[in-house]
Image (cartoon, rainbow, N blue to C red; front, side, top):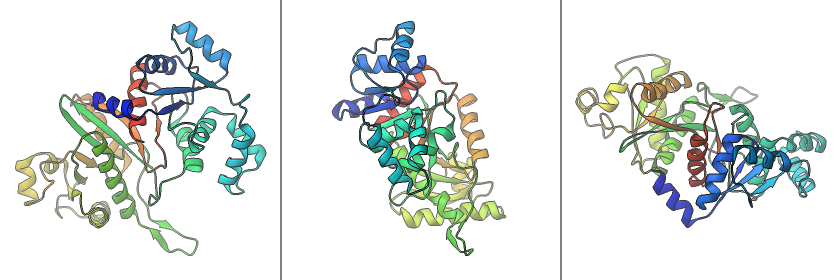
Length: 332
């Protein structure tokens, strides 16, 4: 998989900004990318501190751009742009204070076209990576929420699983008058479609299973209704995709069980893209696949934003930073 993504980047050079430029794991990845030459890192932090950390770790970052929010020449322009983007929700002083932080500063570099993508979270929380992305880069046209996907790889087998990291559950969006403006089912349908698109980036021809404890009406309840309605919404929004549900996991992956429980479905028994009805089952599911099934998990890959911005686990290692850098840049 990574060889194909690297070829994409060799043919279309891109810049990735790291929000935590003095972290040893980030520096190791940046030095490796510099040596390989297909993706250009930008490091955020105090120049002397970043160089000292690199020297301590023996990482060659000579020639890489290091940007310090405290001394950045374009800060006044950046503040003005952020004030405009926040539309009166933040004062110029508040914007300047936030832009002194690597997560906001890096996100604005992407927003202003100074970088193509961003990777953060080595020390920041997921919320601290997603919040500035939502405020500044915002969701792409037609998107109503940010979701996530994990790409799961075992040998030659590649699967996609979403959403396992961002949306706790799905509730109707209601306006001040009490009118439903976007249903829970529409939200889950959007996650399914975005996950299918992400899967395609990684060479998967998506067969999307909308997972439940019920298969084709075998179970009842609000959770089953949500998945069934989301399946109908997804089919309307993306009729070109193979999407089916609701179905249990065994029906999704076993041809014998799938075609018995859901005869004629193009997905049942052959699914490679799995949509969970809420974060609890999704998070448990992908970790079972990783720990017991022997799949390597790559993600969470954020979906629905106007630019590729991704979050690292704070427990990540340098190899994971390097891999997520390639994934993030290839999503452009």
